[in-house]
Image (cartoon, rainbow, N blue to C red; front, side, top):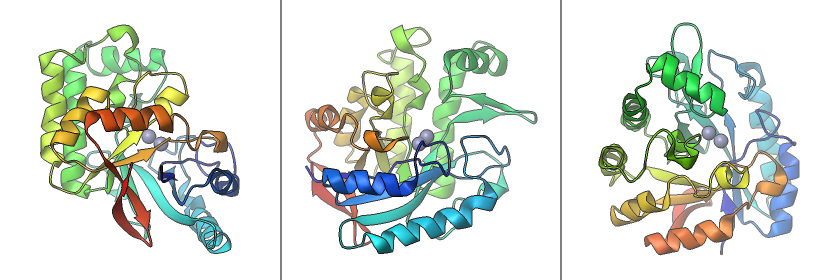
Length: 275
Ligand SMILES: [Zn+2]
Ligand SMILES: [Zn+2]
C-alpha cells in the first residue's frame, strides 16, 4: 500500500507534538506524501483551533519542513475548516494552501457552540437544548450543512463525513439502518457525486476508541463507491504514533466496498493510486 495521510493535527492546534515529529514518524514508516490540516481559526477561538495570530508561523513551519525533507517525502499544507453558515471570516479561500478539508464539528447560536465532535454529555446538550430532543432534525441539519458547505466552498475533501454518529454507540439516538437516516446520507452522496469532492475515509474514531467503523460507515462507502466518489485514506492523527492508525483494516473495508483506488497528492496534483 502507498502510504499517505492528509488529515493530521499538531500542537499548532489540538495535536500533541510538533509537525517535525510527524514528518520523522512518516518517513520511518515509509510514507510517500503527507499533509497537515490544522483546525482553521474561527471567531470562537476554541482551544482546538489554530489561533489567527499563529497562522503565519504554521505556514512557515510546514514550508520549512517541505524543503528540509524534500528528498524523503512530499509534504503539503492544508487546513481543516469549519463550515459555519453565514460566517464571513471563515472564508475557505483566505489562505494560499495546498488543500482544504471542510468539516461540520458543531452547531452554534449567538452565544456559544453545540458540539457534534464532543463528549457524550455535550452531545446530549446539543440534542436536547439545541434541537429540543429531535434527533431526526439534528441529523437532517448536520447533513444539510455538509451539502451547503460543498455548494458554497467546494473543499477538496469532506472531513469525517458521518461524524454525527460519534456518540451513537449502541444505536441509542438513531439506527443507521433506518430508511430516514439512509435517505439523509444518500442525499449528500448523490449531491457530491461527480463534483470531484473527495471523502475523508477517516480512521481516527477507531484509533481513539469511539467507533468500530471508519467515517463513513462501511454501508455508506459501498454507496459512495457505486457513485464513484473519490476517497482519501486518513487517520486524523493527533499524535505521531497514530499516523497510520487502523489503515490496514480500513483498507480492507474500502476494498470490500468496491474501491480499488484512493487519491493521493503527488507533485501537487491529486491522482489515483492503487489501494
Ligand atoms: Zn475534524
Ligand atoms: Zn481533524
